[in-house]
Every structure is written in C-alpha cells, then in structure tokens.
Length: 390
Image 1 (tube, rainbow, N blue to C red):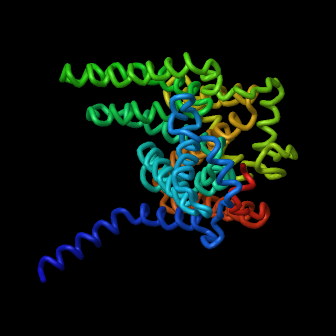
Image 2 (image 1 turned 45 degrees about the horizontal axis):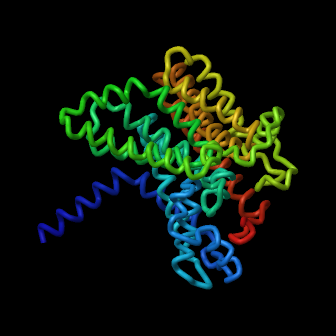
C-alpha cells in the first residue's frame, strides 16, 4: 500500500510540475486531430503518381533534397495500398513533435510560461496549421527554424555531451537537405562558430573527435558524389531550381504577411498571415532587436534570418515567405517579452500591475488563437484533401 501511495504522490508531483506541458499536448492534439474522421484517402491513380516519383530505392542517391517528402512517397510506394491514411497520421505526429521543439526553444529562452504561450501562438498560426501537416515541398520549410534554434540552444550550454554533438550533426544535415536550408546553415555556422569550436576542443577523447569529423566528412563526400551524377543538385538544395527572379517579390512577401494575396500559386489566398495582435508584437519585437543588435547574438541572428528570408523571396517567393512568416512569429514573441519587461520595469513592486500585464497577454493570445482557428477551419473552409496539393 505504501508503494502505491508513493507512486500516486510521484504522479501528483509530476502533474503539478509539468501541467503546462500536458496542456500543450492537449492543445496540439486538438489542432492536429480536428475532424479526425475526414483524413484523406489516396486513390490508386494518385498512388501511382506518387510511386512514380520514387520508382527505385536509389532515389536518395540521385537527389536527396526534399528528403521528408520523398521518404513519405517511398513508404506509399512500398505499401501498395489503395487507401493510405497512415501518411497523414505520421505527418501529424511530426507536427506534434515540432510543437514540442518550439516549446523547448522558448522555454529555454524565456521560462516555461512564455514557452507555453509561444508554442500556442506558433502552432495556431494559419501558415503552420496549413503547411506542416501535408506531405509537400513547402511544409518541410517550417522545420528549418525549430531545428536551427534547437541547435543554437544546445550550443549555448557551457557543457554538452558528445551524443548531442552527433545529434547536432544530424539536425544540421536535415536543414541542409531542405530546399533553401543551405542559406540558413551558413547563418548558423557564422553565428555559432565560436561555440562550435569551443565544444569540439572540449571533447577529451581523440577517437571521438576523429569519429565526429569522419561522419561529417562522409556526409560532405556523399553530397559531392551526388553532384557529380546530378549537375543540378546544388540548385535543388538552394531551392532555386525553378527560380523566377523578381526584385519586387520581397514587397509581395510583406504584402502576404500584412494583407494577403490573390495569387492562385499561394496556398493561402486573401488572408494575411499575421493577425493584428501578432503584427503589433512584431513591431515591438523588431524595435527590441534593433536596439540590442550590437549587444545580443540572438538579436543579430533574428535580423540576419529576416533579411536572408526576404532575399530568398526574390528567387522563390513561397519558399522565402514560409520561413519569413515563421521568423515573424518568433520576433513577435520576442515583442511580447519586450512588452512584459518594459511594463514590469515601470511597475516592479505593483502586484496588480503584474496581474494586469499577464492577463492582457493571455487575453490577446487567446483572441489570436481563436481568430487563427476561425480563419483556418471556417473562413478558409479547411479541407483534409491531400490530393488537392499534388
């Protein structure tokens, strides 16, 4: 009996300590599994279309870009099923994991409460709800920023295990193999070079150092071999394979963030990617980043990513826009933190002022979330029809 009591007390303590994490799981499941019964079925004709993309197992040797989409298509190819619902379940789980990664990133930066609110804001955004749950070219792009900042967060710790250095290598490869990811990898290396050098020389075992170098050299060698057999491979990695250079695409991208677009090539039409609350916080966040540009590595990184994404839009509007929208949400969350810091600095000992500030943020986040869900499920008349995206 005493053991049972101890177990129950342990569960109670964990629930009290991690209740926000559990709430995040419930919220994520709601956003992912809404209208569960209408998950799509893939007709045999479309199954053949997908199978033709990956007819032989050596497709990764020829061109490993769009890795997630190709692996998923290959699973369909291997299954030989006329109706394949599992694919959406898999991508929903990937989305779920992605939300938790976002939570961890902002929890490390700003604490568990703001980490929780940040994950809610991003996972309820229109672009996030639409893109990441589908097996398509653009959905993969939403993985770039969470992986980017997850790596930076690990590197910012004073001490990290060798196993985490291997994990950093694998995550870096995933970013690299995502279209346009090569540009974000360059930013990652330039902004974290000192940290990378420090952690590498902190490894005490010479064998571990050699092995870490070796696996990364093998990855580089593999990419060079792919290039020798496929001269357009590096263009595929940049995401500019079907590039249409237009200088005014950056203006179009900002228009999509603020107003929406009538362009049928954009998946979300006539709806701004940022609601009014996120827009206000974005302005605050940009102000904060500019003011702290000289003294904060994070501020410099955010602004560099923002500029890089705008530049990418001039070559590939949607590829740049999706990451740009994600960065806008990250900066908006920084704006929320800046607002709270400024408010609490002026009222450091006023309990009522603190309650008012946090209550205002909670109310605005709630309205932002409800508004995003309404856009997605009602205004956009969201359809789970995977085939429409092929």
